[in-house]
Amino acid sequence: MNTVFAIASVTIKELYRRKDFYVLFVLSALITLMAEAGTFFHDDKIVRYLKELCLLLIWISALVIAVTTAARQIPAEREQRTIFPLLAKPVTRGQVIAGKSLGCWLAAGLALVVFYLFLIAVCGSREHAWPLLNYLQAAWLQWMFLGVVIAMAVLGSIVFAAPSSNATILFVVVIGILLLGGHLNQVALERPEPMRSVLYAIYFIIPHLEWFDVRALVIHDQSLIAWWAVAAASAYAIVYAVLFLFAAWLAFRRKALNT
Amino acid sequence: MAAIIQINKLRVEYGGAMPKVALKGLDLTVNAGEVFGYLGPNGAGKTTTMNVLLGFANATSGMAQLFGVDVRQPIARQRIGYLPELTYYYKFLTAEEILRFYAKIFGIAKSAIESRIDAVLKLVELDHARKRQIKTYSKGMQQRVGLAQALINNPDLLILDEPTSGLDPIGRMQVRAIIQRLKGEGKTVFFSSHELGEVETVCDRVAIMCEGELKAEGKVADLMREHGASLEQIFLKLIGYRAAA
Image 1 (cartoon, rainbow over the protein chains, first blue to last red):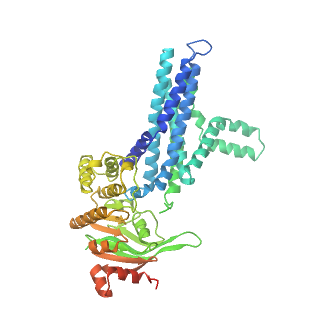
Image 2 (spheres, chains in turn blue, yellow):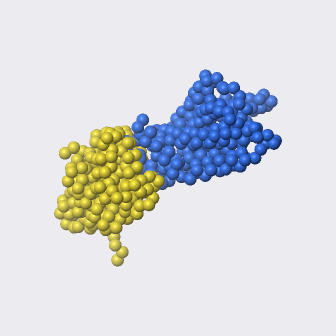
Image 3 (cartoon, rainbow over the protein chains, first blue to last red):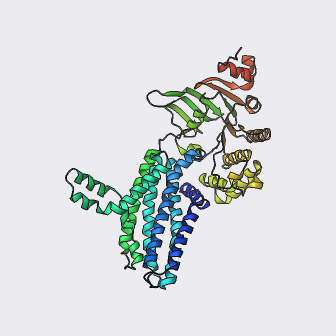
């Protein structure tokens, strides 16, 4: 386990020594602060739109950080050949995959903490209310969502040669699932066979990432989600992440490293 | 003497329908405490042998062991240090951080990590630059970081892939001195090189490879006596080199 954590720590250091995170954070902060300076419908107290905008930026930024970081990890190791001194140590390829994924996930978690603290500070200062548990549930479920996305990106990074093609495909798939995933069963009902069965199969196979998007919880100050439901969603995300990482390990364990 | 590296009938083929044979049934033994030079022209199979020993490539048939453990087991690499031909390290880390990272991977006790980092950085004369990111290092300094990471676990076997390639004369001298010092400490060193003079100076035994086959193996002095020629002449003869008239 030490090996996995050691690899993860290098991944986290890499993310925070690059500029991506800072650029995205500063951009999100600037846009939010500019929106915050204005008023909505001449009512200072309406912060719903501010929350909606800020949360949308957080979702986009976190997704970009997670996908671009995870998609380049293993290709960069191979391209820069840092994989060779690493695998010359008592390290298995499974540990490399686990360490890289864990590092990306923890780094994405740290980024989420920074983004959400900013959101809480901006919105709290305006509405003088601090529904911290709502924020916690929203951030937690988003982190679980990012765990699944990172596992998909790591799998893609072994299957596709170029990180850019992996990232592009992943953005399309993730946004597709977020927008359409929950409606596929209804679409299937309206289709003739065999399309109906195909759509149903896709509906039951894909990870339903849209379940983790609980921005409304924060935006509309809805009552908290039952904690058992949060735990079940977390377990669901972990199962999918493990499945994707297992597939990544199967693809990577015998793969030639182009020496 | 105990065999540290044991290779039997190792065959490696690359490619699918028209496979290229990189190693054709190699048999090789490297014993404890030896400095072993692995020679051959480009494409002879030297790097392939190292890749199999380090678990980067899979053998088509045959067997390779380090310390009596199959090379496919990661634990076989617990007591080795490896220096690649070119430096491939995380350039956003400092020398200290990269050594700490590899020390953790080897499972070195926390209390021993810092003293071990101090020792190897002093050995490779990089103590003054320990807090600088590797991307700011010169090529020679990067090669010395490579040597430092190869020594962080105090290995019993050092595998060096052309350790002096691209180094200036001072860098070469330093690497040679380190190899001699490790030899004095009873470590086993297995290294490939194109520098025959260097091999003659530091090696106990050598193997000469050509087109995936072992052409000669033995002590440098014995080979020279047997062939009545210098190591360079033996090398050129065994690889079938004919100078243009």
